[in-house]
Length: 360
Image (cartoon, rainbow, N blue to C red):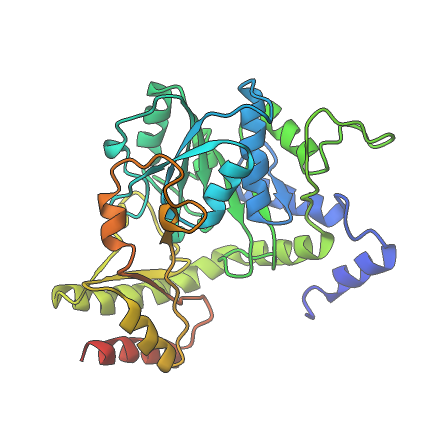
């Protein structure tokens, strides 16, 4: 509180607490500098609205109005918000499989008919193979969007995804490594797209005197207090990642032993990616129900995260499913363990001892 109270007090005293205030603008400029981006990112009230607006902007750029539709390739193994943003744009998801990196498996996509877009996901703070995604999208003339909600600040071959000319979004939710309490951001190297989502996040207004609109935008602006928190956390982000690496290495060591004992499997992280592990997923050899109950008994909060969206009540049997063998095989076995940058050694050891005691 002491670190941000001066800015917060100033914000309240000025009365300028929202509507693209000075701290929102500074947060965007700080993000631009951190990412070495040619274009300034835009921030939103949350990551979901960043993705919704980015999809809408590209849909309009392709010449489709809100009543028209086309297919979008997307992994089923993701948070429901990824697919919700597609469907809310009146588009049709085509559920695709993943591989052991927990990211979309392009080798198993055998039908791109009527698809105009592909949305990949940076699951658990990792990244898909960026070069393969670019080649695939060019081959089939698809708009490529990266739902990078959990993976802000992660590089592929020492470059941020935006430096590969990929349109992407991030979440700055309280659970994310870079948090603004609630918030999100979007970036495209297409200036027309960036101008369009700037209008869309403010009801679609191109001018503010009479509020004239050309597109159906929704209010999705970030407020100043979230930007203040985001600025502060971004200034410490490199330090946060370094602290996190120490904890991640401890996780890797203990769970590698359990892999060797054939008790679990873990997500494979590409040698080209330094994953930040927003959560730490382990894959059991059986349904994870009993493991989850045991962890809760030990007072450890775990999540069945991600899930198979194609099996959620709203989506079941509604949309095209490609070969989902890997997704269907792991969806009931995978568990996300808590991991955060401020974990004490005692808590880490308690987590490890609890997991071991379950198997013993």
